Amino acid sequence: MATDTQQAPMQATARVVPSIADPGPLGLAGFALTTFVLSVFNAGLIRTADGVVLSLALAYGGLAQLAAGMWEFVKGNTFGAVAFASYGGFWISFWWLINHLPTNAKGNDLHHALGVFLLAWAIFTFYMFIASLRTTGAVAAVLLALTVTYVLLAIGQFTMTAAETTNGAYKAGGWVGLVTAFLAWYASFAAITNFTFKRVVVPTFPLTR
Image 1 (spheres, one colour):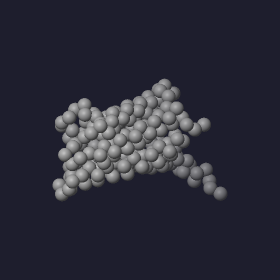
Image 2 (spheres, one colour; image 1 turned 45 degrees about the horizontal axis):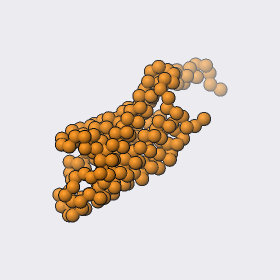
Image 3 (tube, one colour; image 1 turned 180 degrees about the vertical axis):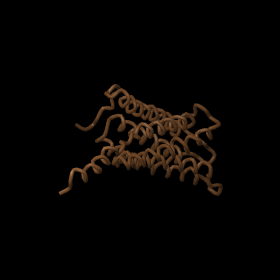
Image 4 (tube, rainbow, N blue to C red; image 1 turned 135 degrees about the vertical axis):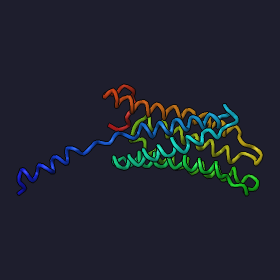
């Protein structure tokens, strides 16, 4: 049997283990802001200087979200970890892709390749939406809108000619992307506000009882 003096160091150690802050609001904010800026250009609201989104894609949408995903792993939140780490990876790959577009593509191959890229992300996002139906309405709304965004952008790329840089479907994807960004901002705002007020101020509409 352990004595009281033997148990005391173990109890003291347990008491000093720090809690880990929720990385979710950071991940959602990084996703929202980067999606908003890119979608402004995709919707055709600004036609040139779209390269300004690349810094956000690397630093905030990419690295910040990736870090949020890693902390979700530490917290034991598999859904949050997969979502944030994956979309962090998406933004980093987007940054790399735009900086290294292939120069040997023939005909519509570049548009079709980008369409496959976007379609693959639509598939991933759709099954994450299904999984999100056990989280909150705020998160599920983000993923549903994002699925539609990816599908429209993919259709836009598949239907563009080699001489085009945008079309109606692609612009529609930009507009839905703006909606997606605001939904993600709402979810981030709700999480951080409810934490700081220590009560539910902004509803997130839990989907589980």
